[in-house]
Length: 344
Figure 1: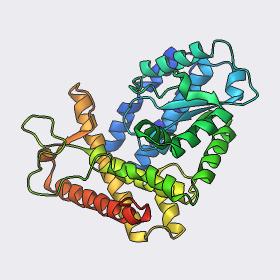
Figure 2 (figure 1 turned 180 degrees about the vertical axis):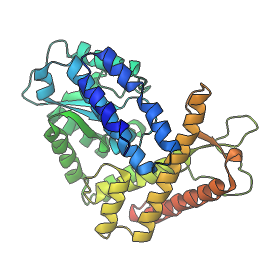
Figure 3 (figure 1 turned 90 degrees about the horizontal axis):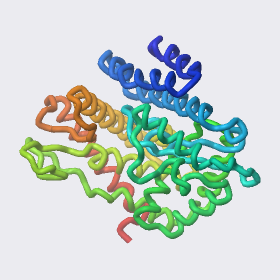
Figure 4 (figure 1 turned 90 degrees about the vertical axis):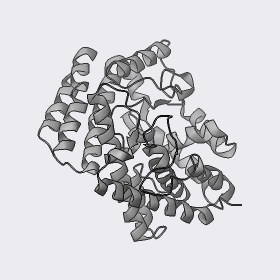
């Protein structure tokens, strides 16, 4: 691990105001780019980003929230940030769980808005879907969280399935972690042995269809209208892989939040073959690395980070590895269909 990481962590933890914290936040992407170019494995790189972001969000919350609120709540990050699979700064996905018997400050809304704006200033854009503590729907008492997550599972629609998937990946970054554990425990108990609920949840692996069949050229799949064959890595491979594993984790009470840790536990417990588990880990890491590489190029040219990759610009070795990764995801989806009765 780079010696720069502890130094930056110390800078974050020593920040006495949001301006100082912003200076530390501005260094994260540059550090990760340097680590990537020096050959740091993608799994280790993801761990470093998760560690730095968690410390950054924790310190920001301490700077904007009174100590009493911090002590009686649980601040969460969710989605790819919660899984530790987000390498570049992306839209905020966070939430707040409050103790049932706690009366929060009267200005909780203003405090939450302050926090979301601070993260935006640090380079983490506001979530277009408003999945942030600044949205009152994403800050609730523990009892309310238990009710709404059960509702998402029992009465699923497009929005509730997305919300449930995001919440399944939650990690505590500040406050009382037991609050999150209790809500997630209740959710897992409800889903156990309920094939209908699990099938509804797992069905989201088909949200974007299959990735294209491999050929020397790429068909017009998720095409943006120009002459270049652009592939959305999240839709083509990352999401169905991650959500399929997430569904298995829910079905088998796997408590881990990262996709790799979930796969390792599923293999260990005999719910997934060792070869498929290892292939999926390797596929995920390759797709993450390719997405990071493309994102860094876009950032360097001051373009928006899109998550797209131009397959014509990949080396023959990367094209071959991309084929293997997408084929592995397709095979995994086929394997999932009878497991969750997706054709019923």
